[in-house]
Image 1 (tube, rainbow, N blue to C red):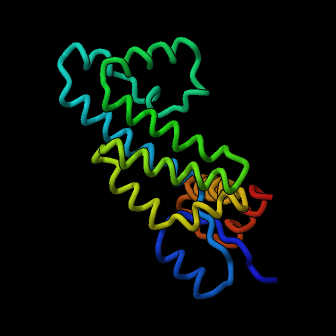
Image 2: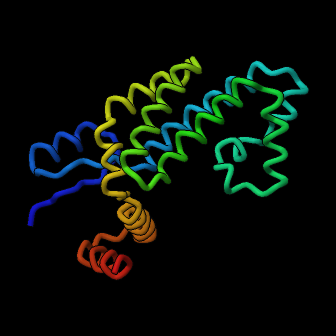
Length: 192
């Protein structure tokens, strides 16, 4: 049986191995793309916090969760708190809007529309001229083909990430034990 699709993060050794050993199309996991976008917004949040005056800092303090959460998952009180924060800081507000716009693309069901929205988002980021986004846009542009394939196949590696977490927990519990066969059995039992 041939592997036709491989869902991975944007790591060149994985890409090279897949290309050398399979005919699979590469899909970059949307959660890794989202992580890169969120990291930029968090970097901007830290930078803006560092240069804020005391009153702005009080408003910004303990708001990381709100800024990095998707707006659709916030309750009304959190939305109001976020709205007040965004009124105070235009750079953070622009970054937040770009994050929301970028992550919203991954809920698009039509592949062509998703690709068009992604291209428009990249333009919007470039037009915003927020320096912290530059590296992430380079990465997204470089790996565009695999991000586009997400919309074609609508696959993530969430299940394998879940298995990895389970295996890590088993490994921690078994610290000091040397029975490899028992370890394999526990993995099979847990992941069945």
